[in-house]
Image (cartoon, helix red, strand yellow):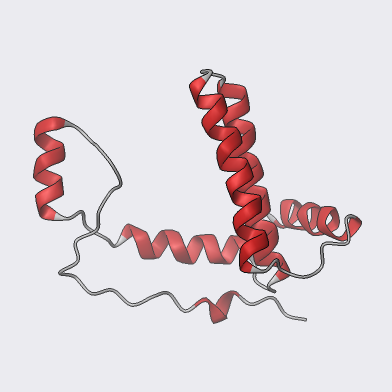
Length: 125
């Protein structure tokens, strides 16, 4: 992602008077709608619609970060660094090696990991 995309996203939100972050219920409804769109597309094996739903979710979430006053790019970099340090749950890893992946990837809970400090991702006013 680059500043041009962030600027375009910021303009898109501004043009639609979307200046404040959504509340939890509104956020949930918006995401669920796109997840439903993705599920329908997946069942129809419509790759283009799947990509559209994923892109809509991504744009929506990045816009929410902007509305909260955070740099989407910095937040993503921080998050990727954080999750890259995780190891898979050892029991699940063995299971997946034997039978192939199934279900949600589980992190090794024996390794305590601090949450990233997202305060450094705050946009200057």
